[in-house]
Every structure is written in C-alpha cells, then in structure tokens.
Image (tube, rainbow, N blue to C red; front, side, top):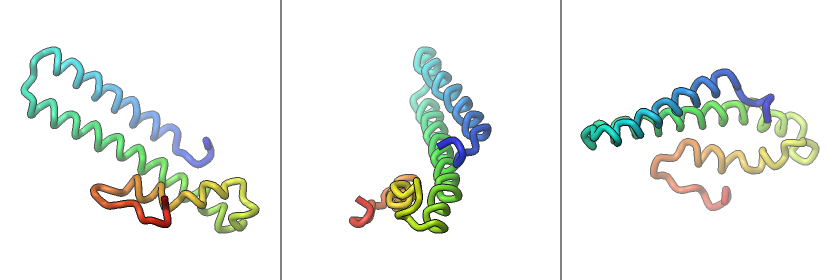
Length: 103
C-alpha cells in the first residue's frame, strides 16, 4: 500500500537499521564486550519499532480513515479497517496482551 506510507522516511530509517545490524555483526567478530553489543541490539530494536510506528501512522491516516469515511463494506481497505485494533496492539505493545476481540 504505497499511498499510505512515508516511503522516504521509511527507507531512510531502514537503511540506518541495516547499518546498525551490520555494525553489530562486526562487533561480534571484534570481540566487543557483551554489554556494548546488547546496547546496540536494543538501539536497532527501537529503530525498527519506530518504522512500525511510521507504517501504523500511514495505515490509520489512509486505510482506517477511508474505511470510516466510506463504510467498511464499501471500502477496498475493509480488511485493513477490521485489523486495525490488532495492528495498533502489536505496534504499541511492550508487555500488553492483544485484546480477545482483536484476535
């Protein structure tokens, strides 16, 4: 769904994450202390979570809004609208559980 994502922002973030993961791989080869490697892994995970937020924002602004404005039955994004609670729960969770209705 190209129209609902900020492609430039998303690609910029993903390239940064790829660089972070490659650096982590080099750190392992160079016998860097575990604490430093874990800190970099955490940074990469946070950056990936940020990508999820960018995608979720586009999903809400485009797919969900379209479903609300035109009715879920008439919208080509009806399945997106039906899955919105699940997407929000997955993207925003830390240790929270997905609500039963969203499964």
